[in-house]
Length: 329
Image (cartoon, rainbow, N blue to C red; front, side):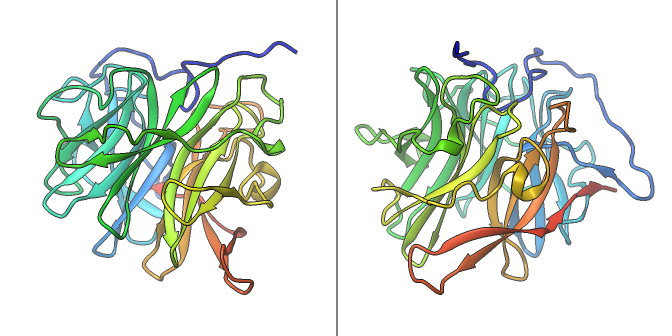
């Protein structure tokens, strides 16, 4: 079977490549609200509020921010909805994908992908308009996407992301938040594509692993990631564990933990882990638009169950009965 290398469309919709524009594209909600269509979503929790952003693939190009106090009903956090707009002191003019918020204490970072390059912008609050002092990607030496920043207990920062090499693979490097650069000599590949679920062949492509998110529970690191092409019905989520942010990694033998067979919708993946206001661990992710159409992708939230009964590493599963279909009101 011929393999198709999908260099440009690995984690966002085929519609993402229009140049900067300013034509708004919105649908006003009715009394019940309208479903949210953020792909590669992320949720940030602060002061009892939830903040949701993600890949939106519509004009004006950039990123919008939604706010909620219950995870079910959301509204725009700013009057114009946008926290980053293409061409306004930010890198990129196409392919705005896969953002993440990070609170440094004195400022907030907004990591994202544009033009198939990771970039980092900053703002003074979660609802700020994020900009860059120097408009540039993080690492222009080669293509890299899907950033996720993690701060370990010792104060070191690690940037997980995806690089291309006849496929998409997870990489990690130490990160300097003051300079916004990778620490020289620390870049390394995370692990191989070697579990059957990671390449089912349902949508022919080179190997793909993407959408990294890392959490730490009782001194063990849990790295969540998605595998298969995003257009595949078998796009899914698994995790691996390690004693340190750089490994050595052991993949969960029960992977995937989120898939169409578990959550009941195709193309389920590429999200973010967060803890809700009641202490529950949640995962926000996207699914295909329907059984036959991929985009625009729909946003979902599910509860993660952590079983500590057999010791570390803990077994993490999802509760399919807990799935939330968030709506904008």
